[in-house]
Every structure is written in structure tokens, then in C-alpha cells.
Length: 199
Image 1 (cartoon, rainbow, N blue to C red):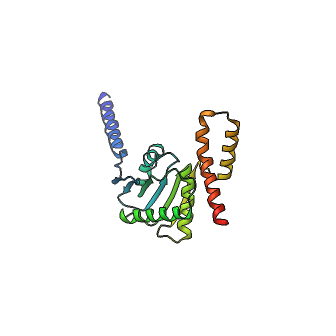
Image 2: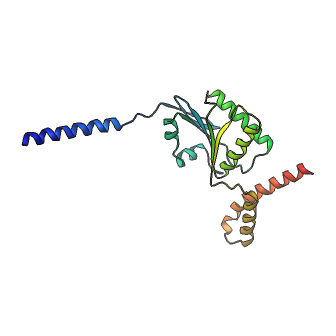
Image 3: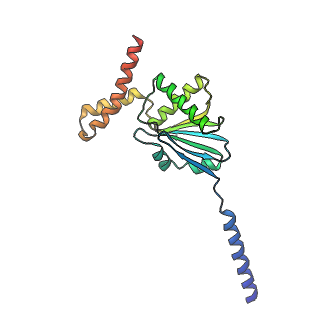
């Protein structure tokens, strides 16, 4: 009886060891490229590309630390391009064109997938994602987003302006007044630019 228990214990232990060994999946090979303009995690066998834009004060490093999508994306064959393009709530036509050209250049130089491209962003980066995706599609760019997503983005800029104006008038949070003036100033500038073009 004791012999059977020992044999059974050995079988259980050896099977458990194989299971643990089989469950350890090797991460797909990827290359990490960092520049002042972007951070790229390049999948070995590319089946697509995910382009990410950060929140207003953030950068690519923040995007990767706060949004744990890189490993999942690379395991599915998607390279992840996190841009250091921030502090924008809105893009004028020249800015859209410049950003589109920069994205095309990065995709070409880094030999990234030109199909299955998804664009996304966080907060103001979501605004940028919507605007640049629309621009790329309308202009039949070499980069054609298949999908776009936004997270917590202030797409209602007029609403953002009005809320900032109310908060300034309340003067309730004096320490935040300078922060409130930033989006208000950006929206005011955008309204001014639009009115000058329409005159």
C-alpha cells in the first residue's frame, strides 16, 4: 500500500511539473525602439499596428506604464507605436497634415504593418486620435485606420470651455485657476482661429 502511495505521489508531482513547464509561454520576440518622437514595441511577425496618443501632460512612457496593452498586442502580432505627441486638444489642417506625414514616415522607416491599423488615445490624445484618423481616411493616406478608440476624451470642447468659465467665475479652487485657464485658453484660441478663417 505504501508503495502505491509513493508511486501515486511521484506521478502527481511529475505531472504537475510538466503542466507548469507547459504553462510557461515564451514571450514573442519584440524589438523596442525609443526616440524623442515615439516609443515603438515592434512585434516579430506583424499582423497589425496600434498607434497610441497620450493624455495632455503625458508622453509615450506614461502611456505604456498606465495602459498595459503592449504585451497583449505583441503576442497577437501587433506592433505598438506610442507617440510623444501631447498637449493638443484640437488640430488645425496644417497640424493634421504634419502629423500624418510623421506617422507615414515612421511606418515606412520602421517597416511597420500597413494593414490592420488601429489608432487610440487617452484624454486629449483621444481627440487627436479622432482627428488624425478622420484626416487619414478622408485624404486616402497610405495609413488607413481600421478602427479608432478614445478613453475619457473631452470631445465637447465648447462644453469644456463653459465648464472652465463657470469654475473660474466661482473662484472656489484658487489653486486650480491656472489649470482651468489652460483648456479655456486653448478653446478660445481655436474659436479665434476659426472666426478669422470664416471672415
